[in-house]
Length: 104
Image (cartoon, rainbow, N blue to C red; front, side):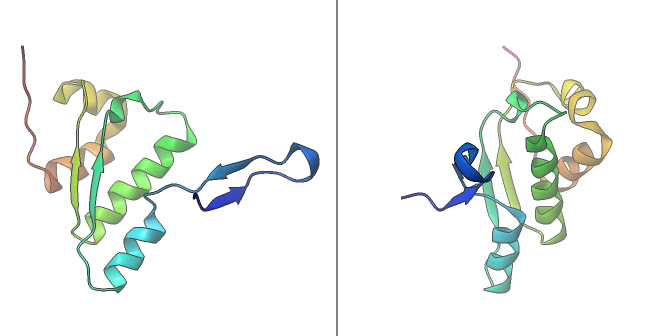
């Protein structure tokens, strides 16, 4: 069963599942002495103008601050990733990830 959050009031209220990964959960894990580890698929599908992008940046930042592990995949090249996600996100990836690029 999902833990849900209310996204409105009255008859128009929409209940959506809370995200499985959040900055708050990362910080809670660190508080319990765990090293946070996050695995994400196809992050290139996120629009850089969306709320999702802002949350992804917050997660990357939290992992950077707490020396967590980040594993993700994308169809973007390194140059495309930097152009799409910007310098701050790219810096966090370069400093915290072993980047593997496969060209077929």
